Image 1 (tube, rainbow, N blue to C red):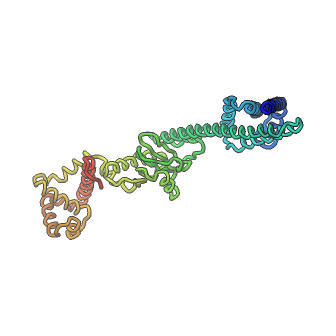
Image 2 (image 1 turned 180 degrees about the vertical axis):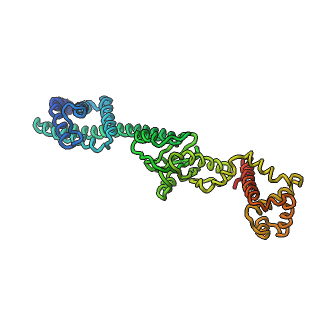
Image 3 (image 1 turned 120 degrees about the vertical axis):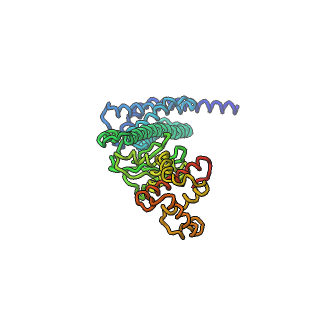
Length: 409
C-alpha cells in the first residue's frame, strides 16, 4: 500500500511539473519582450532601432534561448545543438564588434533574473510546490553556465581567427618592406593601414632568428612585425633598439640563436636583415661565438673579411708568394709571426709573449720576412692589404676547420 502511495505521489508531482512548464511556455512571449526591453534599457550598446539588424539578432536570440531553457528543463537529455550554435554565434558577433564578453554576460544575467522572477511569481500564483520550483531554478543555473561557456568559445574562436588574419597581414607587410628592389614608403602606407594600427617608422631594426630556435610570441610588442614560421624567421622592430625594446626581445628570444641587425632607414631594412643573417651564419659555422641577440655591429669586419672566400685565397697566395719555396713548417711559423707583427704592430718582446717564443727568435723571423717580402712591409697600403688578408685567412681557416668537425672559438 505504501509503495502505491509513493507512485501516486510521484505521478502527481510529475503532472504538476509538466503542467507548470506548459504554463511557463505560454508566458514565453511576454517574458521574452520583458527581457529585450530590460536589456536595451540597461545596456546602451544593444539599444538599437526597432527591426534593425541588432534588434532582430537580440529578439531572435532571446526567443531561441528561452525556449531552449524550457526544453532543457523538460528533458535534460534534449539536444542543445541549436542553442550552442546560437551562443557561439553571439560570442563571435561580440568579437567581430571588438567587444569583450562583459556586455553579453550582463545581458545573459538580466535574462536569467527576469526568467527566475517570473517563474517564482507564477509558482506562488499557482501554488506550485517548492521542490518543483527548486528543480527548475537549478536547471536554469546550469543552463546559464552552459550558455556563457558556449558564447566564450565562439568569442575565442573569432578572436583567434582575427589574430591569425592580423598576423598574416603583418607578415605580408614585412615581406613588402623587405623586398628587393626596395619599395618607396608611399607604397607601404596602404598595406600598413589595412593591418590595423601600424604607423610607418623612419627607421627599423631587423632581427634574424635560427629556424629551430625557441621563441615566445606573446612577449613581442604589438607593433613588432614577425615572420616566425618561415625557413628564415625574422622580426622587424620599429625604430632603434632602446633598453625596453631589448628587454622585450630578451623575453621573446631568451634561448634563441639570433642576431640583432643594424638600425637603418625603413627603405634599407632589407640590408639590416641580410647582414644579420650573414652574422647568424657565421655563428652557426663557429667563426664567432653563438648566442641569443648577437649584435651585428660587433661583427661587421668579420662579415666583410669573409664575404668572398675565393678572393681571400687569391690575396693570400699573392701576398705570400715569396714564401712558396720554404718548408711547410717554416712557412707556418713565419706567417704566424708576420700576422702578429702586422695586425698588432707590437714589439718583439710582446710578440714573443703572445707566441710563447724568445724575442730573439721573433727578431730573427722578422729579418727573414724582410728578406722574402722586401720593403712591402714599410708601405702603408701594402701593409693594410696584408693585414686584412691575414685576418681574413685566419677566419677562413677557422671556418674550414669547424666544418670539418674541429672545435670552434
